[in-house]
Length: 288
Image (tube, rainbow, N blue to C red; front, side, top):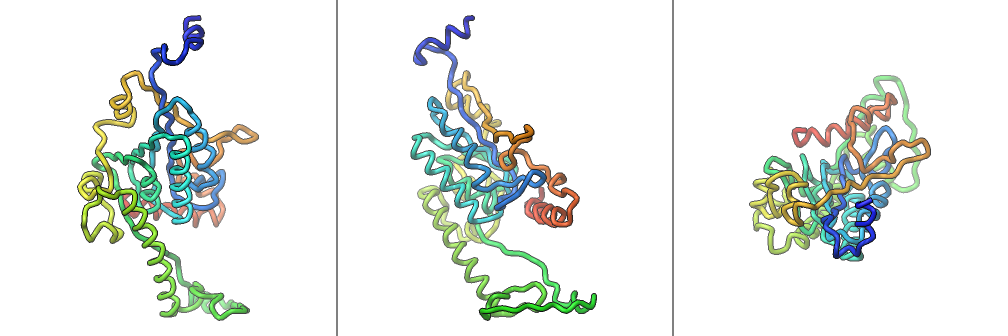
């Protein structure tokens, strides 16, 4: 009864404390995904972000990031959506790095007005990478003849079943340099006045949270977990509310903004195994 009457009071007379919405973004950043291979992309993340920023009385939105990167396009789209919502709703964005915010994960972290990491977190990896496999001799060995017909001399550029061509590699690198410059511009803009003049910052290297702070990639090292940091900022009565994805027709959580099981990503299908291996490679690059 007392709780009900308290809700009837004007908010300025209540003693409940502030509630901060928390969005947890975890996993590789990949367009697509599914029930067995949840990933981060704009389609999956948008509903959760909208819900978090819609909490009118919250002065800030806390975003927890744990991602080794992935698609630069999806990373940039998520970054842009966060900044748009922050301006529209006039809320501060506090980003907390868990194990890693690298490459595309760090690009998303740039949406924060402040970036806070653990001393042992991994941050950075400001660069662009493309990878794949080549099988130019495989078809011959198994007695298969591949037939490809194209209109346009470059339609089979970087074909994995053909030997690499120097001009194809040069073209790919030119695209990578363009994307890299976009990434660099984002970092310079968002970390203006904080970024250290160090040639290695944009080299693709990654660092611990401690070194990241020295380089100006982050704003601080958390003295404790997110809960302690938010209570320190907004008062001991501050409450955290985890904003999660909705549930589908059969009550299963919509994939994307939830803990990712890399083992579960391998759903038993051949494509699932390949995709799981690719995701595992993203994490293992940072020793995870």
